[in-house]
Image 1 (spheres, rainbow, N blue to C red):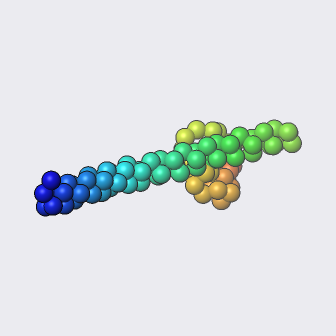
Image 2: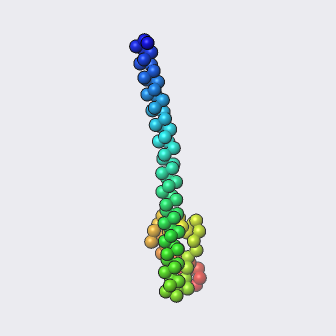
Image 3: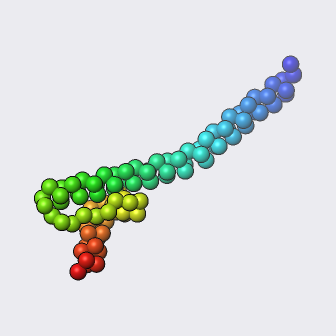
Length: 94
């Protein structure tokens, strides 16, 4: 086999591996974002559920609904998001 042909084959394999790696990184970025977003939804919904159960045990007649929007707000903003939603609901009820 010719030396130049061997170099061309090695460069071709390197280019193929580099393109596979690049495609993998392009796919992995959005998957990380989707994973983080879904974890925020899950933690937000769980925190709202625990809050509602705790208020029910204390015989407080106040609960926040659990849906995608409230789960995302409570998961993304944390305690401040839950407090803001509770304040808005309290002010709307008055």
